Image 1 (cartoon, rainbow, N blue to C red):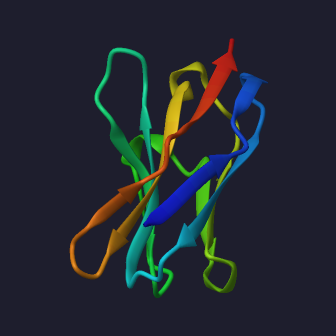
Image 2 (image 1 turned 135 degrees about the horizontal axis):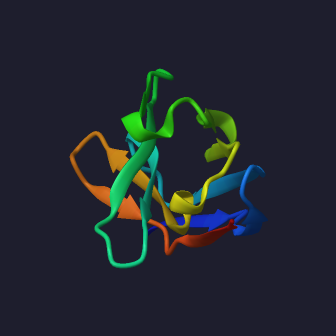
Length: 116
């Protein structure tokens, strides 16, 4: 089994910052990408950012440079630095691991609430 555990969510005022962390544990898996998705109330889950094993990043266009994804391969961690948060960033943030064989693994999510 592969476990992904997110942390770092919480309540923050608009304009504030949060840093999400995702820890990967369990059996060894060949990682292709790691990323963050979010699901706002009443909406579908959407990609926020992802990063390949080689460090190539991809972000949702709507973020306008406010978020930064990073990873520590040695520690099996991935992070999401979120700055200048807006109310529309509110949602449950999920960590995702995409394996080289096409399997997706998900964490249970961490709630981010941005108050205006």
